[in-house]
Amino acid sequence: MERVINLVGQVGGIFTHSCRTAGGVFLLLADTIRTMFRYRLRWDQLLEQMYFIGIRSQVVVLTTGAFTGAVFAAQVWFQFKRFGMESAIGPTVSIAMCRELGPVLCSLLLAGRVGAAMAAELSSMKITEQVDALRALGVYPTEYLIVPRFLALVISAPVLTGMALVTGIGVGYFVAVQIFGVDGAYYWDNTIKYTDRKDVLIALIKAVIFGVIIAAIACHKGMNCPPGTAGVGKTTTEAVVNASLAVLITNFFLTVLLNAILYSN
Amino acid sequence: MLELINIRKSLGGQEVLRGVNLKVGPAEKVVVIGRSGCGKSVMLKHIMGLLKPDAGQVIFEGTQLTALGEEAWNPYRRKIGMLFQGAALFDSLSVFDNLAFPLREEGEKNEKVLREKVAEALKIVSLGGTEEKMPAELSGGMKKRAALARAIIRKPDLMMYDEPTTGLDPIVADSINRLILHLGKMFGMASIVVTHDMTSARMVGDRIAYLHEGKIYYEGTPEQVDRCEDPLVRDFVRGHAPGIDVTG
Ligand SMILES: Nc1ncnc2c1ncn2[C@@H]1O[C@H](COP(=O)(O)OP(=O)(O)OP(=O)(O)O)[C@@H](O)[C@H]1O
Ligand SMILES: [Mg+2]
Image (cartoon, protein in one colour):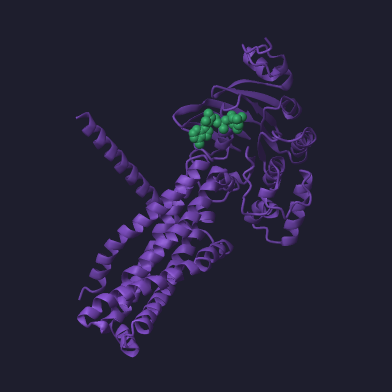
């Protein structure tokens, strides 16, 4: 009996903790958006963050896109050729890349690379009182630290996802046509014919929303770091794990929601 | 100028400040002493609005600040300078950019003016020529002095120093003490100096306040403190650990 009560207590504790964290993330998000409109944007900070997120993440994102496209094209070919459906490989690869693989994998990598960097940087500023020093100099930390990071990620995520899509679909074509000998013109025709503008739109909408989620979770974790160096490591890990899970979970609901909105008629 | 009324604050389940009352007049220099961990830094953070009191009031130049929200504090924060105990220089900025930061926030864009003002502030803390260094390349004492230069560069009305001479060699420490006196005289700057260094306390303080168990336990001029017969104050001032005798 006691054990059951303990367990219920623990589950309840985890539940309230999660609710409080989620609430904190939403408050930070609301504050960020409000701050964005109330202060002049710091272009130098934004450009610095864009450089780090947008430019420096390209290799990682393009590699992910390329190999996802390659392996997916290969798997689809293995299955589809048994039914003589080679002509459907192109659209299958491109639609899967657009709707799910591109935005989700790209965002997971951004959570790992950018989310971790944001959480680590902000939490070490927090524990060395640099955030307090900023406040003491009369600067609102949300405005100076969070808004540029947030904007940079929300702008970069769809651009990077778009690049991953193009690479993935291109490499998928190469694998199917050059390696497995599918008819190239046919493959390409079908890809264009069955890939809708809406599929690309889904990719970009998802990428923007995932960018918001990653930035909000990483910044929230960083700004609420417990004191001590151990706190920075823990905060960084938690930021990456939470952001990745949030991306995967949100993805399911987004898929359902976007399908309902975009294909309602 | 500044008045703290009955400030109470609990942190981490322990009541750190239990009703602090402190008054600082214009151009007055108040030294706050007290055992390590008694809440001196926490008290300074309340004056800056970095921590919000559980109860009590902070009144600065006639304005009640306690009720203000985070952003409404900012205009007042610009009139108060603070040297953090751990320096708190921005890691990602060079010494020059650290010092120029508060000036740029005030709207100063002229690079030449910035260069001049930064060079002057660095010279005051005997760090001339370190503009291009990054904080990680400075020693602990140098960081502290660079942070001091950043704090005073806007010539605040009230300057708070959290252990300004800890970790400095005696000569630089002496020059910092003189600097505190000088700033008071030149700009009529009021100061609150938190220190463990009694030489420094006697030298710069118009008044010395002893913080103990979350309250200002004793307050007086340096002469009064030196003559004070209260055992707690006496032991602190003379650096004597009560009831501990290891000489055998
Ligand atoms: N953010 C915090 N969370 C929990 N407890 C805190 C926090 N900041 C300070 N404390 C506690 O408040 C007390 C006072 O801390 P404070 O830093 O003000 O001491 P201090 O008087 O400045 O000491 P020192 O002379 O060593 O700098 C300490 O017991 C510390 O553990
Ligand atoms: Mg302290």
